[in-house]
Amino acid sequence: MSQAIYEFPLNEKVRTYLRLEQLFRQLEQGKAASEDWQYINFLDCLFTLLDLSERIDLRNDVLKDIGSHEKNLVIWSQHPNIDKEALDFALQKILRLRESLKSNKKIGVELKEDKFLASIRQRFSIPGGTCSFDLPNLHYWLQQPSTHKQNDINNWLQELVPIQQAIEITLSFLRERGRFSVVEAESGFYQGIAEDKNELIRVLCATDQGHYPMLSGNKYRYAIRFTLFTPTMQGSSSVDTQVSFKLASC
Figure 1: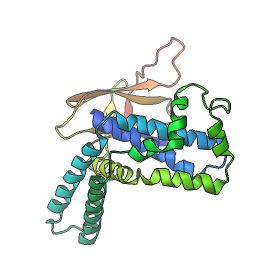
Figure 2: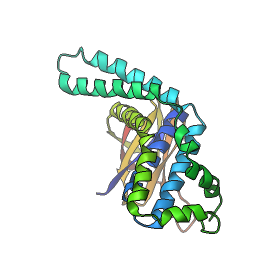
Figure 3: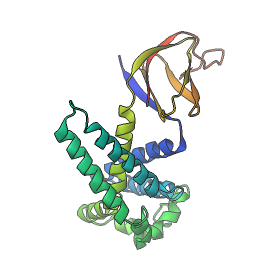
Figure 4: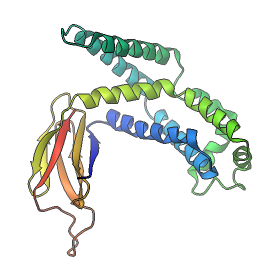
């Protein structure tokens, strides 16, 4: 059976982290770019990430989370059955990451000051605004050797490594807080109550049954409704049968 995990954040911070995680994954593909459109997609993704990071105090939020992870690891180190070597490795990584974040400027400052990126960024917000007559300097850059372009990409991404690693660690800790258990959605509907520390709801379900989950709610309670990908002849999108799926509250 083909399955997929759907993740639904219960607060704005985790929602932002998930969006940034997806953007970082897309940026990584830029390292393997070979066609002009792939480089343009990379730059578009980079500017989207910078726009998102400008709207929030990302650095301070991440530093708070890193501090919480450090405290938890110290507490876990007292457990008699803990893997000391693995825990020490994780703790040292977090400590190095915390110092790196503290010593860095605000996220993306150097990227925003890069003359080439600054000269083309605004045009990327215009539909189709990356044509050669809009951005001749971009098309000049696209004609440079692959080694030159990849070197630029690596330099641009290097500034984002600390925040990328911090988000990866934070989401990893968050996902580990929940374990999947089988639940039933009567008539395609399930309602749950979020515990105090729940920040993320994960749904593991089949992808070959013609439906997908949608979640609404907040940090107190939530509802999952399964929706038909292709509506019925009568135009209904609601699933009216029992759906078995796995749920993890993190």
